Length: 327
Image 1 (cartoon, rainbow, N blue to C red):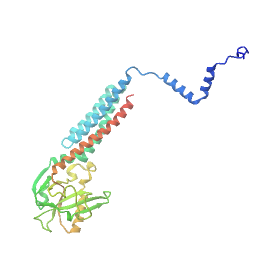
Image 2 (image 1 turned 135 degrees about the vertical axis):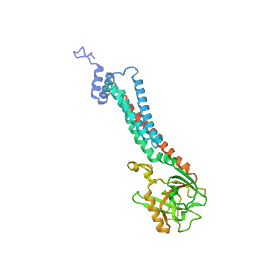
Image 3 (image 1 turned 30 degrees about the vertical axis):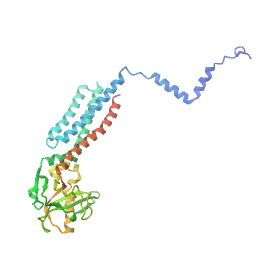
C-alpha cells in the first residue's frame, strides 16, 4: 500500500475525525460551552467569599435581635408603659432612616443593613402585639388586680368588682350536676360551658353569683370537667375579665375567645331555663383551680414561648434573605 501523499492525496489527520464527531454530538457541544463559560467567568477577588459570609452573619444577627427586642418590649412593657414601647419602635425606624441618609446609594451593604432593621422592626411589632394580646396582657392584668381570700359563694358580685383571683372557703364548690353546654353557631360550633358555684349556706332560691366556665369541657347537661373542677381540693377562681377592662375597642378582636362574656351569658340563660335557677344580675365568671396563681403565671410563659418560637422561625427566614442580598 502507498502512503496517501504518494498518490497525491492530502494526509488524513486522525484528530480531525474526533473534532467532527464532537461537533455532531449535542452533549459534547453542551459540555464544551459549559467549560468555556467557566473559563471566561471572572474570578472572585481574594477573600470575597469570607467577606460575604460575614455579611450574611451580620444581616441575620441584626434582623433576629431587632425582631426579638421589639417583641420582648411588647410582652414585658406594653401594659404599663405603652409610650415607651412605641418610642423604642420609633427609634428602630429612626436608626434605619439615619443609615439611609448617611450612606445613600454609595454603600450598598449599609443600605441593606438599614433595610434589615426596618423590616425586622415591623415584624417584631406584628409578632409582639400578637403575643401581648393573646397571652401577656392577662398576666399583667391579673398581677395588678386584687386577690380575695376566704370568700363565700353567696356574697354579692359588687364586692368583687376589682377582683382578679378569688379564693373561696371550704364550703364552696362547683355544682357539676347543674351544668350546661351552649353550642354557639357564631363561634363556629364552640361549646361554652357553665356550672354554678354554690356553698352549703345557699338555698335553691338563692341567686347564683359565681359561675365556673370553660370551653369544650362539658356535656350538653349535667357533666362539667373544665380546668380543675373535678379536684376536691380546688377552691380558687381566676375571674374572667371584661374585654373593656383589658383593651380599647380597636384591639379587642385580638383577644382570645375566653373573654367572650356574651356567650357565657347565653349559656347561663340556658341553664336557668333548664334547671330553674336564678342568676345574679351581674354574674361573675371564673376559671376553677386549686392554685389560681399558677394558672395566671402560665399566661406569661405562653407569651414568651410564642416569642421565642416565632424568633426561631424568623431566624431561618432572615438567614435565607441575608444570603440572597449579601452577594
